[in-house]
Length: 190
Image (cartoon, rainbow, N blue to C red):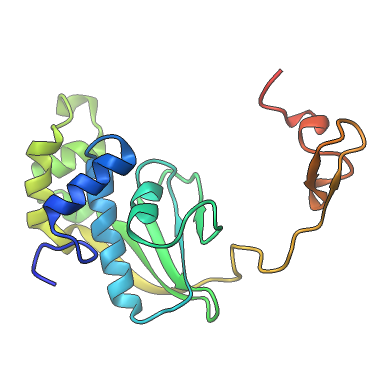
């Protein structure tokens, strides 16, 4: 792997795949790629990797683009904490590496700081073509990482019992209560 590669992809190849998958070139996915590359490199050989992201924006797409972990297969868990951080971990041992964008280190890079802080005082957010070279040049210098151990697996490993809701007749996970969430008043539709 040459310097500047992200999970084995040249920046140019990564940008093309990013645009095809995400619909646009995204600084968040570029930083996410650096984060994943760092986490997997620090984690080492791991045939049973899972990832959890702590934001719903961009970072989950970077994980799905660069790893076999997806929302659909359950090996990617997404938390809506609003933190630009992720943890890659071994789903058997629960040992992992947590990587976050380091707010202190970002201060050394004016375009990255303006993008990351989204400050109204900072003016317009920089365009991807302006920001990407600074992100690539900064590389791991804008990241903080440390080993972690999960309290428990975030993906259920056993089959989830399902049944038919007595009110609407649709199938749902029985652990959610005597009726499905929609019939409990949690429907997102009318």
